[in-house]
Length: 126
Image 1: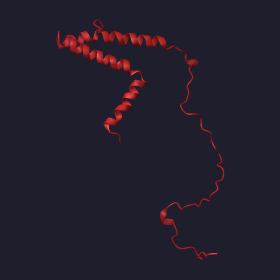
Image 2: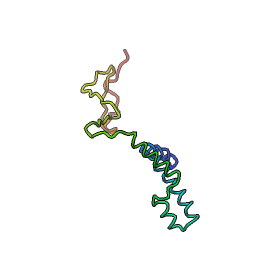
Image 3: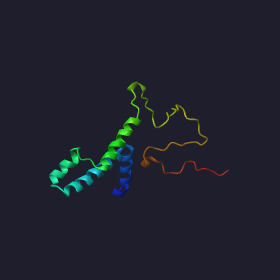
Image 4: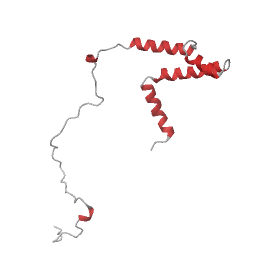
C-alpha cells in the first residue's frame, strides 16, 4: 500500500495532465483576493467581492487571458475527423507455440498426489 507522500506525485501528475495549472492558479488568486479583501471589509463582503467577477486581481486577468489563448490555439474538430489511437500496438495472436528443446514433465495438480516412492526397478548406472 502506498504511503501518503508517495501518492502526491501521482496526484500532481494527474492534475497537470488534465490542464489543472489554470485551476490551481485561479484558486491561488481567489485565496489571495479573499485575504486582501477581508482586511478592508467584512468576511461576507470579501467573499462577495472575490467571486462576483467585478473585482479581478492581476493574477485573475493572467489566468483568464491564458485560458482564452489556450482555447484559441486548439482547433475544434468534428467527431467524424477524430481518430482514437491506442497506447499499445496490437498483439499478434499465436495459435501454436513452437516446440521447445526441453521436455516438460506434467506435475500432479496437488502436492499430496505425488508418489514419493523410488521407481521400480531402481535405475542402474550404465
